[in-house]
Length: 303
Image (cartoon, rainbow, N blue to C red):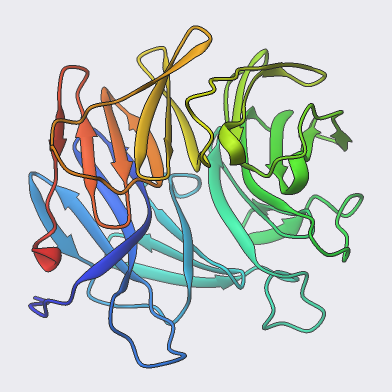
């Protein structure tokens, strides 16, 4: 049993089923230059910590994919940690990160798309896990040009995949090749959520919010929201946004702030909906919404 109590900053998280949340974090106090990724799970109303820390900069987390009950943690240099019960498997994505020869740079997001695992990153890197191997599926678009790349990836299946990122770039993968869209913005795009082939939502810097599909984007503008959106998620047919210490939802062509009822500023970063619950993972705050009210999930190491 791990009893050490060290304050942490949450980086990302994902729910595997109702009332179960996995999060990755970094201890707030580390020796200079040291990397550390710490995994916590919240289930049955209790927090538990995975006994082993990992020497990497954690970026993203996913659940599922083969095997179906595994948690997956992505490090920015292409490290992938698979946790299935007490079994841990470490992998390295060839070509990803700055620690391998001729690497293309950091990666940002790991995502379970229809039971298959994808990773995207800078310089338009996109990898797919096939069998036990990570294969590049972006050889036609990957580049060493600076200030390019993807922050997020999502899709409904392997022939409906979107990747978004720097300077408003939107790419669509039809299962065979990538197609670059004529984006209506040059703002950095941080998050994409594919609900159906013709129902795709994208958000990013400067309050940008797009809705539609490849070649057909509607810009939803609200002059009251000009900060950066970090994440977008659908919950109970409503679109929610997280960014700049703010939770909001889309109401027609307007964006409405969410009052979580804490009467204090909150931190927000990632959103994930699963089996009737919407989770908000911020640097210091974990919140959950059941459709009626928001509830704070305090972490004992941060109290």
